[in-house]
Image 1 (cartoon, rainbow, N blue to C red):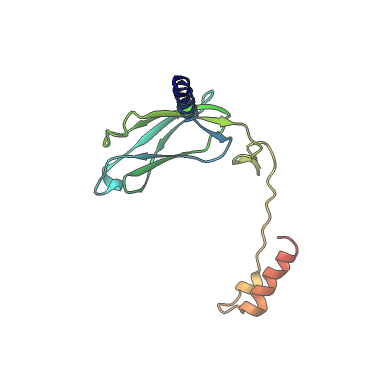
Image 2: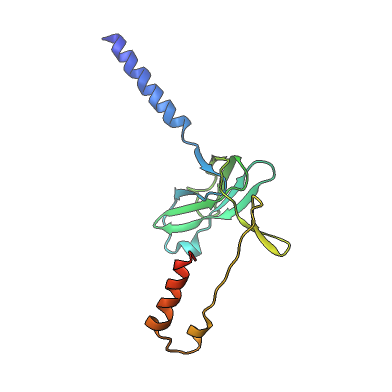
Amino acid sequence: MKYSCRILWFFALFIISGLFFNLQAQIELYDVHEIEFEGQSFTNPYLENRVYAAVYGPGDESYYIELFWKGGTTYALRVAPRAAGTYNWQLYSPTDPSLDGLTGSFQCESSDHRGFLTTNGQRFEYTNGESVFRMGDTNWRMFRSKNAAYDSLFVPYVDARASRGI
């Protein structure tokens, strides 16, 4: 009987420690990561409350971001990391002591995502260097009159583009 109690305590400790050590969130490179926080209640959170986060990542990667109000007493921090590694954050709030000083971290792993859209001279490319193919199409005939016919102009135009994979 006393061995079975020890085994149960061991498994409970194992499960609790597993939950504790897995609290650090893991996300992929360039993915949006959102962390929610519960703060105090304010009559008008837009005017009365300010919450900021300092986010520090690998190398010189750092952000200073204002959290946004999601309704009620919930605030959220959104960040999309640009480098793989560990990111640490700390909240600052001159108006909400329940959020001021909170800290945490998340782990960013490499991914096959192309990254953010950037410019390289006169062309666009993704962060990973892949070129962006830009294509535009304007149906000038359809916009010549205020009363462009839906069935005779718009529908055939869209169907023709869809049949070509556009």
